[in-house]
Image: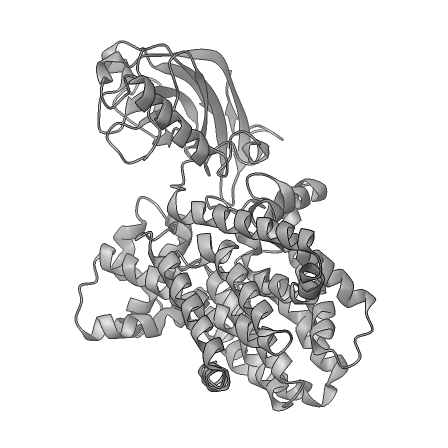
Length: 583
């Protein structure tokens, strides 16, 4: 990969103006990625943050020294195997992050949480920027420099590369890098054949980063087998080192050679109705790819054009035919996945690995767009929307919305991550113009009541079931409930506790659900509470109480809490017995 970048850079330097434009684009992207000064990850990315330290300092892939980090949250991200903690997720991301961790560790920086969060963010940013470099390099061999720069800018700033992959060590950033490097090798292979064999390494690494990427790169391997069969053994040989590493890691740390993160054999994990998942992935306001990156609608035209045209020696069209099959397989697979929305995240995270292919599909329509002023204006509007949507995800979104009523809330066109920032800004403007009391200025004026129409549904995860309880609270006071920022002292949220009946001091489960927008006096807000049920059967009470963050609970200033009885039964008691009963 480094050799590819070096060769490409020397070639680009022949054109001074082009090199300056590329450098400016790189600076803009780097500032955009790092400018929010935050690491936007989750429990899923925590092992990738810690593993580079374990690899460099301890020489292994164990997470034992970070066990305290997973005691309360993030327990799903690790497994206990042979008395050691290991990551539940693939280790491609932490391996690629190693170069970014080496200098700080050699300088003796402390391995505390803030330092490791910063290193995680810098690593993620560097990996995604390198993937954008490969996107630019293969586009320059297929289309004009101007079109290549614009499409690369779209890839870097108008997709989940900006809002997700560059913000933390998700699996997707390294996956995007591997896919982009594979495409570069294949495009380069049209002139220098041995690059076709070298493509085997990034293809195999894409699978190491994220198992579903097998669906994405397998058609690319088929491309080599069909069009250049002489070089297919070389491609396989270049991929073997990664394959051997996967087998060694699985046997040494997971106890089985064929460990799979996604457990494809479990039918309950593929229970989403196909059309529901497909529509959600592509057009839902909460996760839709074409809602958050509508510029990629033009990629559909690029795919169609590659299938209509006679490919001949057109390497770009030939690659698009095969890679479009891979994209289709990934979309279809995630459409059936039980958590097709990708859990707690922003935008269409699960499709991020396909972005290099989607951007490859933009180059066939570049000339068609430029031929018409109207199409140019439309494309410009789609680019602005895409960049603004992902800028909002990186700079504004604080995760408050993602836990709301999944997956039903993903279809709300009035309450979603794209509309709520404007709604909050408008609310703050009204508060300032009317000089209204708020939970910050007048906490003594806070009051609420609860509408007695709560609903619940079973939410089954990998290991146990839970319930999703909906509670509607009405602002009966005179102060506005402030929603943003969620960590401010004045922000209002809903605190819940699940307690065994008769044991008032014992708390089986507890949590907090934040507001998604400001609530004015007289308005109602519907909270969706995800409750993980305890293993012990019995009678419980779900106690619901609004509170001002780090301030008073509403029950302490005159508004009684809401108490909901919950009965937890043993999973195996009776055929089809529900794990809970909620009146």
